[in-house]
Amino acid sequence: MDCFKPTKSCRHRCDNGHCIPETFLCDGERDCSDGSDEEGCGETLLTHLDVMCRGSTLCISQTQLCDTLRDCPDGFDEESCITKCPNRGEFRCKDRRKCIERSLVCDGRAHCHDGSDEIGCPTIAAPTSQTAPLKCRMGSRLCKDGRECVLHSHVCDGEVDCKDGSDEQDCGGEFDF
Image (tube, rainbow, N blue to C red):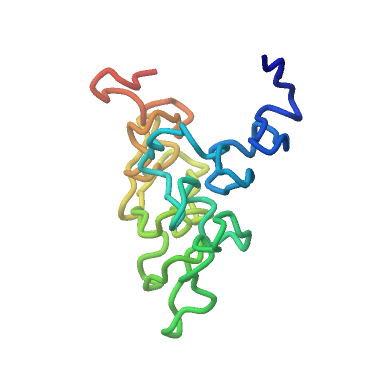
């Protein structure tokens, strides 16, 4: 009769008696010599933001690609990372996976997988006197209160960006605040 009772540090017992914690179960690496820690894991469900490590059942987030940390057993997640853009004047995306033309940076549309080409872009401040209407740059629209602009990609995205909340109104009901 087997009286094994799993604990936090010993969630699974290999055939040879070796104990491993839960974090080692179904992680894509054989920690037990018999491979029992990788059995019965079923098909790994990937979301559109996940990446399957090569030759493994381990799934990692896209944010773990090219982050200088080896997350896949064979280092697949750190391959094909860009250290320097091939053409002078290009913008390297923060995730180090793509270079884009500098003219595409801060144009109101994300061209990098991580959206880093639209982060920290200059905004147009509201005029101190309300005589002249605020004009928004291309790729943006004016909030209903007329005091600020918001990128088109931020309209109806479920997150309030306009102080008056108008970027999340009239969105077809899902994100109306």
